[in-house]
Length: 201
Image (cartoon, rainbow, N blue to C red; front, side, top):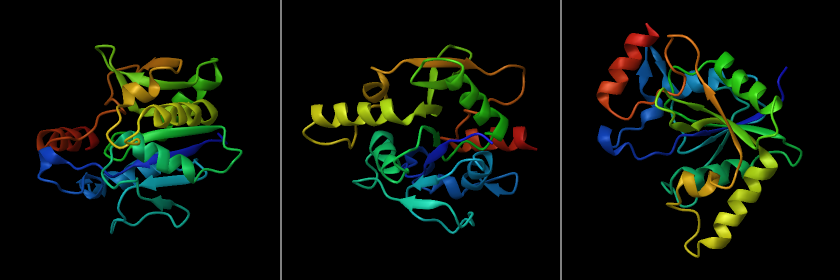
């Protein structure tokens, strides 16, 4: 069994969806958060960063809020990393609104990190854009990057950019093969949700 932790980021403001709590929205009858947690079932531990939800989740899932709440993905990653065991080596960092994510897609990232000397691996879309919230990272370099960024920002990590966090790390870029739905597809709008629904069915 693959040995990695997971940090699932579930605290976004969903401004383009009238502030609804996106991870609780269903796609093909299952909440997006539930779908992401199912995809990272091999992870130990699995940490959800964000407000607790009524969505039923496995009892072993740990919860934490980013500081401050709504502080953005970098602050959320920092909060999630705090709950990892000291000996954790790898962590999947994933948005909670990836309804098409699967366990094989997560394990492909895991294999990519193991096959390289990179600090992490992320999927890239057809235009070569990195999908930073669908990746696997070595915990040591990620912790160091968080510490460097925090030291450079008197205001803290709230509002910090993912580019600022990951800019100094080496990254293996992974393309998704075939014509199936991309695992990094996130739902920022109602139209995205409808498209995910079509793919999932």
